[in-house]
Amino acid sequence: MNFKLEPSGDRGILTIGGELTIDRAAELRTMLITSLESAENVHIRLEAVTEVDLSCLQLLCSAHRTAMNLNKNLILDSEESQVFRQTVKDAGYTRNRGCTADSCESCLWIGGDK
Image (cartoon, rainbow, N blue to C red; front, side, top):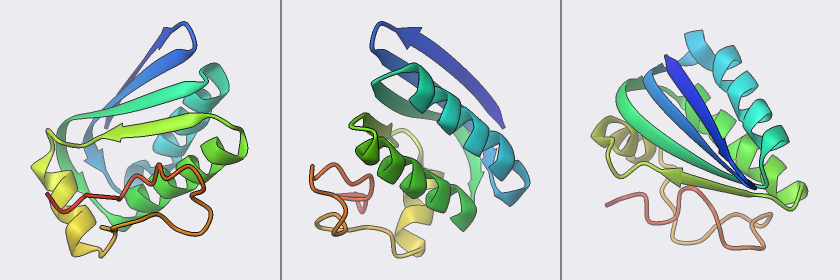
């Protein structure tokens, strides 16, 4: 798995690629925490993702909840990754609206079945 964090004012762009699996969960967790600590608005860009498992989806969901609790924004751009989108769909994560904690209607999984 490869990461790149680009800070830009109050925005940070976290680019993630490669394997997003349980073997890399600790690394992903660390990068998500670092991103949320360094920016008010974190934009996650997925590039060249080769594998995804449920641990990645759970970490992203947790990071989104953390961002909401910190009054920060976490945005996920998964349009370029068919592997990621298919995993979201197969895991049953796609939603029409966010969970009860999603008062800002910014759930990462809304419209994820494209």
